[in-house]
Image 1 (cartoon, rainbow, N blue to C red):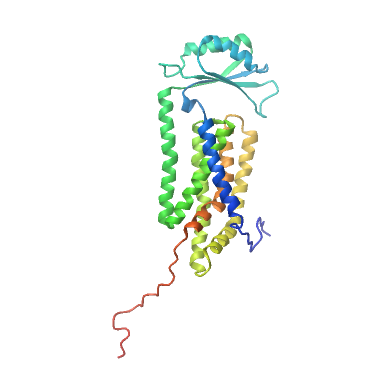
Image 2 (image 1 turned 120 degrees about the horizontal axis):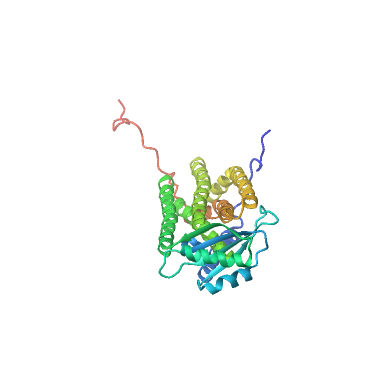
Amino acid sequence: MRLRLVPDNTKINFFGYAKVTFGGSVVLLVASLVVYLFMGLNFGIDFKGGTTIRTDSTAAVDVAAYRAAVTPLGLGDVTITEVFDPTFADDQHVAMVRIQAQEGQESVTSETIAKIEAALQAVDPSITFPSVESVGPKVSGELIQKAILAVTGAIAAIVVYIWLRFEWQFALGAVVALVHDVGLTIGLFSLLQIKFDLAIIAALLTIVGYSINDTVVVFDRARENLIKYKVMPLIDVLNLSANETLSRTLMTSGTTLIALIALLVLGGDVIRGFVFAITWGIIVGTYSSIYIAKNVVLMLGVKRDWSKEKKPTGNQFMDIDA
């Protein structure tokens, strides 16, 4: 006896609430753009340039005392945040001290780092510094450019692939779904001000790959059904295709989310942003495959020219009676 997540002969009308699903996605995408323009992204050291010092102490983190100790050093913008994680021990208190890139320097010098550490140790003698990361302004600018090229290049290559395998309507539907997924992810990161670094770019590329994989499965079944049901209306063919692949979609997304949620809860703060981005991407990617990509294809329509008669086989004398 096999497990059935979706009953056989499921007939869900995925276009029944198109104004709510597709229209809501458009509203959220516009809202994400507005949030990004007004709030921006909380770029990490990878993109912003500067130095991040991770502190570890048995005493509780006193952000105000840390800031008071570092301010006299005249380092400009210094951000101090306490890190919370369920995997930490009861007497383990972690903070991240972020110092902006200094003018005329590729990174904060070792002497400056030593002064920062000494100032913090004066506040808390038990404090230690497990890691120090530095990225220069020039390098961070190059990383931003390469990150944009990586994401846009991946989307462009996928569009070409879909166009060659299916038709241009399917390719446009796929790219709209991908822009939807990436746009909502960036909007959420901007709204929550979660650190945006190279790991998140890797997560975005993973989201793009996962989303298009799910979309191709639905499109592939739709192409088969367009040939099988030659007179069935396009909306019914797309609905049928989504219902036939729904079990596979839920099984794939569900098992992936189980692993991601475990990592999100137990994986630690180092990879939490990366895992959160992929988790959110899996959810919106599955949603867009069903409610966004197919809606675009339905709006554009797919030409099905079944009226052509089969060309007769044989030569020009086949109809002449002997």
